[in-house]
Amino acid sequence: MEIQEHFSEISSDEGFTRLALETFRYQYQHNPVYQIYAKTRGTAPETVQRVEDIPFLPIEFFRSHTVYCGEAPPQAVFLSSGTTAPERSRHRVADLNTYRHALLRGFTRFYGPPENFQFLALTPTPEQRPDSSLVFMIQTLMDQSLSPENGYFLTSPSGLTARLRQRRPPEKKVMLIGLTHALLKFAEEYQGDYSPLTVVETGGMKGFQQEITREELHASLSSAFGVEKIHSEYGMTELLSQAWSSGDGLFSTPPWMKVFLREINDPFAWAETGQTGGINIVDLANRESCSFIATQDLGRFHPDGLFEVLGRFQASDARGCSLMI
Image (cartoon, rainbow, N blue to C red; front, side):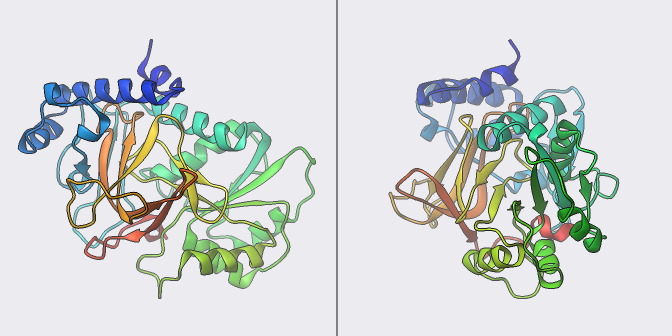
């Protein structure tokens, strides 16, 4: 059985833990950079009994090292959209079908089959950014949808307005996925009642004017598009899976992806319940790179188990999807 079938069939916490421990042992053996990092932490496979015992690799290693298992060349290398540092983060993906599988299973879990959607994007096209994991994600959804009305409109906002106002069959849902800054710019110039419509912002305001709070952002976009809630996608170059929010910035993950919070001032300790902490992510689809990543994002859990992304560590680089524009 292929590993993509394993991670997508997880149905319990016990199943997640078993596969996480097996994945750690595999990556410790086959990922030289991760093995060295684990050893410097004093961690070996025989000392790991829980997911919480697994060392989380700082996300910066994707920028400075080759985080990859095995010697076979990857099918793709996704690059981060930009950073103040001279090097961009690189995620070497051994098998793009694993990415497609994780994306489509996760999306269907939250929204239903992508075949039921028409997808519109305020992002670069695949030709403009062939190395973008976000653009690859959107194109995969469009390929699955097969709607002739799918399209990219970053350079044609008036065309997007016309497409949003088109009549369509009642069973066809419309999802607009956009870089946050691009959605705001469109909303300022082309306000209207475009419902029924699902608007998904993918984050990214670094480097563009003064940042605003999520509440301000969502209120502005909700009013401009005539929708009740703004949805969100939380993903990154270094991951193959995504978390989704159907409103209020509260995210949930598919069963093979989990979020843990570390203390802000002690990266090797776990944050107390209710505290703000640094976001650590387990993505078991990331079998051939690293499934255990310490991000530079800050987050907080809510009583219902959903999590909120509060921003970034102040000392972290200005990096994010908005810098594609």
